[in-house]
Structure formats: C-alpha cells, structure tokens
Length: 145
Image (tube, rainbow, N blue to C red; front, side, top):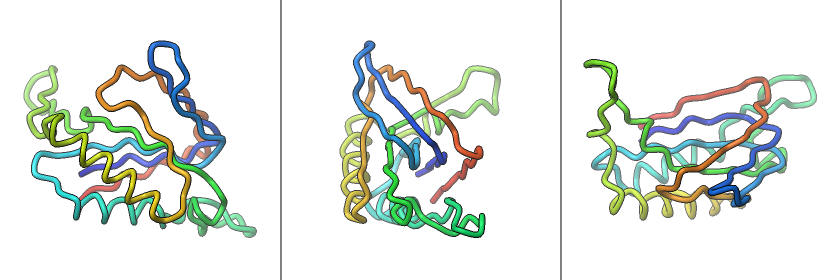
C-alpha cells in the first residue's frame, strides 16, 4: 500500500463537473492499493497519516499533525500509484489490486482514518476525478508498507 500525502490549503474534487468533496486545509492523500494488501496495511498507513507531523508549530518547525491543527483529509483512491514503467513507456498496472477487492479496502481505510476524529472526505472510487489543490509548502511525503 502506498500513500502520497500532500499538505494543502484547499482541495476540491469534481466528477463530471459536479463538486463531490472539498477541504479548506489539511491533507490530500492519494492511496494506492497493491494486490494482496489487507486491513492491517490500511490501519498502519492511516495511523501514519493521522499522526504525521508536517504542520508548523509556533516556532516554525514541522511538529504538528493534521488533527493538531484542526485540518481535514481528502482521501483519494489512485491505482496508478502502482504503475510500473520500468519496461517501455506504457505503464503496467498488474501490481494494483483488482477493483472488487480494492474498493472495500479503500472504504476500510476511510473508516480507519475517521477513527482518529479527523474529518475525512472521499473521492469517487473508479471515477474520472478532476482535482484542484493549492499545495502548502509544498510538503509531499510518500508512505509505503
């Protein structure tokens, strides 16, 4: 399982021009689910996201979590995080979990993150989403288990 975590000031997510989710500030997290991933990996990764100290404290040090600053999380499923372009120029996605297994695990990850009392918004699994975000920093962290 992989997560690309980006500190943002604002993110909006639309599908077919309709606003689906929006957060005023916090984290946009793109979640890739690998074949064979389980709830154990989801719990571990969501705990990391919830407690990742990448927001500045009163001294300008990255020492606060998204919960500490009252931020929100937009969690977006993104199978392309498991795109392998090591052979040729067209990525292969054979490492990504099949949708019928990935979607319930994505929903489990959403619930696991909400358990930390952090407001969580979602993307639409499998949809063609248009995401606008105003990166803060920029701060981007790659988490993987």
